[in-house]
Length: 314
Image (cartoon, rainbow, N blue to C red; front, side, top):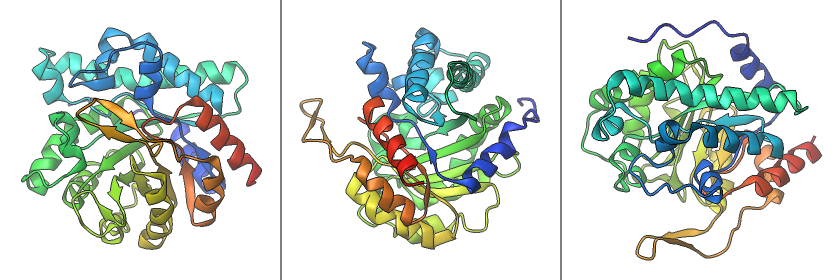
């Protein structure tokens, strides 16, 4: 069992900063690393670099902070004890790598602040869905055939390790299914770290087909959850989801969609053009968003434009 989360003044600072005004999240970590020349065609995806090239992860975070992001999301999305074990990584080393993901983002924040970035800068420890560990695309379908209790047993141990590493917030992200959301909400209970809950959606429904409003409503009475919303969806779906999320719980909304391009699995490449536009930010903020950023294929240039749009919106 990891040690209890350290007492950190930055944690209440995150909640206070969220209440004071919108915060800018970073963009896609994978495209940032691929643009730097790293091969992520691995079941561990960007989490592989925690062991193989941790300095590259830190540089990717730093690039987003320099672009105007105020919150870095760690490289732990696809990191799990089960996934590491398949690569021959034991439990103790897996715990070290999970904790390292938080430290790398924290180190990047300190470097950015030392360079003059307007702080405070925050770290969100990413916890992706069960399907991300499977690395078979089921993270976009949900309905794994597992119970809430089984999913809670999967998520709780790594969330304990991430919480013990001292992030400002836990990012329960790209959740495809209300059943998994219920498990995650149980798993964060008592960890002493705030969290946001973010679904991947298609239209007004989760990827598993449940109405988004009802899925988000599971977090309404959970004090640990400081924001709810969507990520890893199209910008158009994000536009529609923000007001739904705001009404579902009354909590601040988190929104960080993809670029709008589509993935061609056969050709293993992206198709179409980006529809991620900073001009969308004013509408998100008006509808209740307080954490805004980008996900897959959204890079430093887009985050810089988004940060300007947030400043212009006051």
